[in-house]
Image (cartoon, rainbow, N blue to C red; front, side):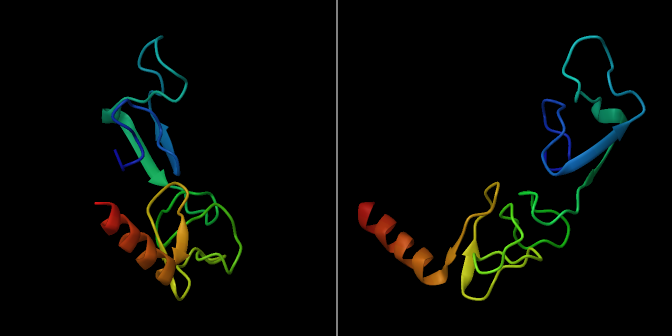
Length: 105
């Protein structure tokens, strides 16, 4: 996983794969690939929810001011998780969340 082809031989989100033999048999979904014949590469599209290439974040939109800029860079004063899509919060809000979690533990 993480290379475009999941452990279940399905194309992972944010990737495009080509294969010499897309379907190795009559069973399996249309996106089934044989690991030995795959060639997968990340889609380099900012705003598609999948962090690839040089993207620092990808929250699924191309709007500034929400923590992840229109060019998929983390904005000053924010931190972003690695969810799909990225969830960005201010550093202060993140610190408060962590303090609340410590109190619960």
